[in-house]
Amino acid sequence: MKNIVILATGGTIAAVSQSVAATTAYQSGIVPIAELLNEIRPLTNLANITSEQVAQIDSADMSHELWLFLANRINSLLQQPDVDGIVLTHGTDTMEETAYFLNLVVNSDKPVVLVGAMRPSTAISSDGPMNLYNAIVLAASDAASGKGVLVALNDTVNSSRDVTKTNTALQDTFKAPELGYLGYLIDGQPHFYRLPARKHTYLSEFRIDELAILPKVHIIYGYVDDGGALVRAAVKDGAQGIVYAGLGNGNMSQHMQKVFNEIRQQGVVVVRSTRVGNGVVTKNGAVDDDEYGFVAADTLSPQKARILLMLALTKTRQPDEIQKIFETY
Image (cartoon, rainbow, N blue to C red; front, top):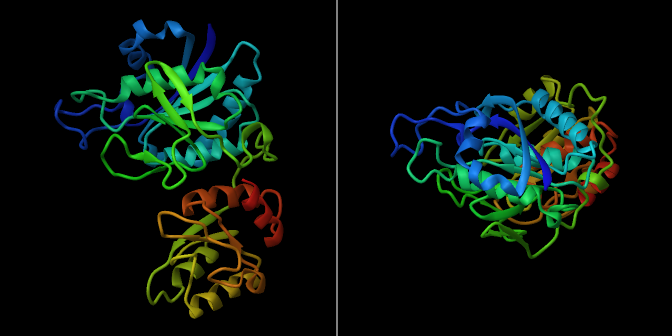
C-alpha cells in the first residue's frame, strides 16, 4: 500500500457548531486530525496513513510564515522514499491561494492534495469525511502523479492554478470557471479528463528552502472614479509590487494609468489582473503594457497573480522577465 502523510491545518472540516443544523455559524479548526480520521478509519485500508497537526486555524488566518513552513515540510517529506503522497486539510476561504503557492514551490511529482469541507464536522450530512476519504484516494493514486497540486472537494478534482471558490456556502463551490475540472472521484477511483498545461511543482524554477520572507505585494481593486490613494498608500507601506484587479480586460482610467506609471518609475512592479470572474487579461490589450512597463496576468485571479508576483520578485524586478513568468506558470 502507498504511504500517505496528512498535514492538518484546521478549517471548516475540523469545525464545531452549536446545532447539527447549523452550516454557516461555527468555530473552525477545533477537531484534531486524529478524530477526523477515526470517522473514516474503516475505509482507510487503501493506504498506510500518518498524520501531523500543523495548525488549528480558520484559513482566514493563514500566513506567509505558515505557507513557507508547509512548503518546506512537504518538500522534506516527499524527498523520503517511504512517502508517496501528501494530503493537506485546509479551510476553504484561502484554500485556492495555499494550493497555488504550493503548486509553484513543491519540487516533486508526487501527489499533493488539498481538501476541506463546506459544512462543519458536527452538521447533518457533513461533507468532510467523504472529502477526506477521496483526498486520500487521490493522493494514493498513480494517476495523480505529475499533475501538480490538486484540490479535491465534492467528488471533483481541480488544478490549483485554475480552481476558485465560487459560492459562499454551497458544497459544489470549488470550480474552474470556463476551464473546467481535471476530473472526478467516483466510487473510490479518480478519473482524469484533462491535464494542467502550465509549469508546476517538479518543473518549477522556484525554490524556497532558504527563503525567510516573501516580498510585499498588495492588491488594489478597480472602481469608478478611483483617485489612486490606495495605490500610493500601498507603495508607502513598502509594496514591491501591485496587482490591479482592473476593469474588464484589466482596464484602468487615464488617471490611474498616470498613477501606476508614477509608481513604476519608483521601481514598483505593476500587474494587471481583473475583477471579472473569467477570461484572459491580454498583454497590450486594454492598456499598452509595453509603453508603461506593466505585466498582464493572463487568466490568474488577483489573489493568484499576487502569489506568482511575490515569487517572481525573488528572481527579478524586470517587467519583461516577469511577463515571461506569467506566461509560463
